[in-house]
Amino acid sequence: MNFLSRQRERTAVRDRDVNKETRWALRRGWPGALILGVAAAAAVTVPAAASASTGYSAVVGHVYVNDNTSGSNTIGAFDRHADGTLTPEPGSPFVAGGAGTGAGLASQGAIQITPDGRFLLAVDAGSNQISVLHIHSGGSLSLVTGGVVSSGGVLPDSVAVHGNLVYVANSGTGGSNYAGFRLGFFGQLYPIPGSTVTLPSGTAPGDVLFNGTGSKLAGTEVGTSKIDSFTVRPGGRLTAAPGSPFPAQGLGPFGSEFRPTHPSQLFVSNAHNLGAGSGTISAFTDAPNGTLSPIAGSPFADDQTAPCWVEITHDGQFLFTVNTGSGEISRYQIAPDGAPTLLGSTPVAATGGVGAVDARLSPGGRFLYVDESRIGAVGAFAVNGGNLTELGISPTLLPAGATPAGIVVN
Image (cartoon, rainbow, N blue to C red; front, side, top):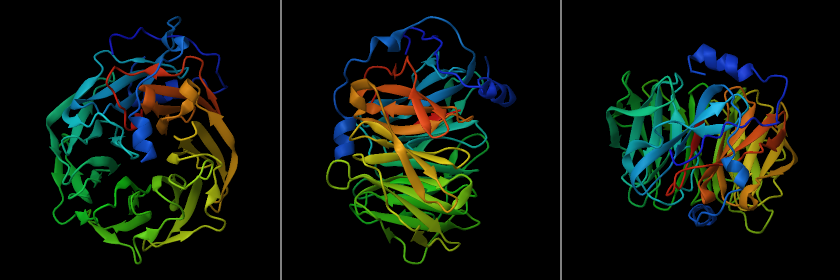
């Protein structure tokens, strides 16, 4: 990313908690299908404001993107500043060790950071592998020794982490499954014997995720419009819930998220409903045995096209879903019982937003970062409750050849 100018421009977007993430960073020790077609589209021109370069703001963390580059896969890295802006991390992009596909992945969660912040895990979909990289104090990355391992299947596209337990969703023909691993202290992944759950051909899992306690694991079957639900046993192996997989409430269940403050509430986007503006969000209660039951009123209208990626604020009050077909981010307020109410939608500015995909909040919750795969860039939005405002310098470009899949923030 050295070809990019340093973008240290202050944005006018501020709120009264401007120093919240700086304090967080100091405590952590940081220094100063439709989806595939859209994601693989050719890059277009980004607004000139994205290359502005004036002023400075403290570095409070980092943003990482799985570039999914064909041949040698790389991880794009950015310094994240207190005002929400991004500048390329020196040395970025970093070699992941495996191979990408060079095309969009129809998935959520293709890259994750371990809970202790020490390691980054990324899928190498082109070589059927998973890479583990060490996150250094300045934000740079390096492969751990023995850090590239088989994903246990074909076309890994999503990874979930809880403590030292890791599960990978493999979506390719002839090797579709959920495969379990243990993450060692030095970052090596070790397959868990007997952990693999084989999926039928055509299932095309698009997301795998743990709830906040690590007692449940769920996965979305985009190809068959079903949702897998499991309880996690003490040894890390899975027990399917009675009745799993459960029928989705729309076509192409895609992105999903457990509510951070209520680990028994699961939210799933229905991305492939037919017709413009027909997308919906489903809300489920996850029983102790893993049985999924729709919350009253579910599914809930999105009024947009292809809601794919889901993110919930850390306080559990608001849900954002990225509509890759219509280029807007829908905003919901979540009631205590889990019922979301649509507040409206916020456009993604560049190229009408079509092709925006995965999204993640900053640790302090003040900014939302969006993987704009179609143009190879990262968008940045200020968060104020359930409202979003795109920063004036957004988006920030990735290197040529990147077809980003997945985004994480520390």
